[in-house]
Length: 284
Image (cartoon, rainbow, N blue to C red; front, side, top):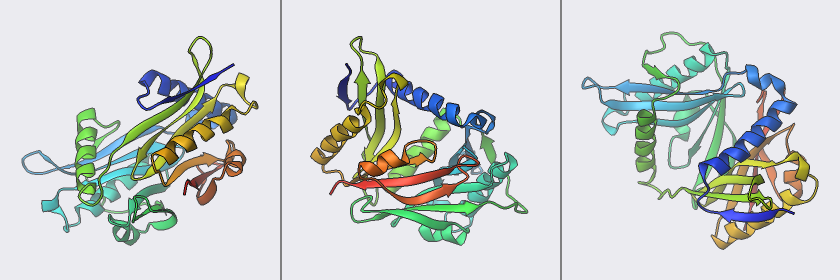
């Protein structure tokens, strides 16, 4: 018999248990994942005084580049630095055999900028954050000439990644406050060992579901559905608008549909030979 535990301050160890379990499941179904590039990268621009004036942070995973952060100092905007940073991180992906990129931006951020670079909207979350829209964009990467040279860190230095992330958040909060709250729900056995669970972050009025996993011995017994019942109740108590996640054709798309999720976008060949689905669920 497993107990369900709601945890708003989950330990790294417990989160890693879920993440590792999910990773093992993925490898079992798609062994080629071990052959794919899997690393983070930072492209850093510095001024004459060696201080950071801009940067892009991304993740190379499952045959795609995900650009998580792009930031340019206000005093250096409107001179092409953002475009150059994107060209550099895209080129880095291509050099690692990755031909696809996806990213997210909001209605108060940089959608027109990305569209000028060739990105296309494939899906969106309404009211994320409340009163605004979150857009998901993709692009097929092609070789480019005269790609500017910047400092490349792969993986990024921790202090550089933190610096860029902090400044990016400060800029975003000029429009909408960003309070990032972790939330986990664990399945524990009588010894207290984690045998499954889910983990994500609550920010901008939505819950970003990152990992879900249940040990093989406990699958097919309704635990996954119970996890989401507890999650839904907690999120509704917090007046959350919806849940957003992604899944693949070898994971749990059919299950998600039975509990109210719908597909709002797809990423073909992520990982190669498979499809990733962007899914969302309204809690209104």
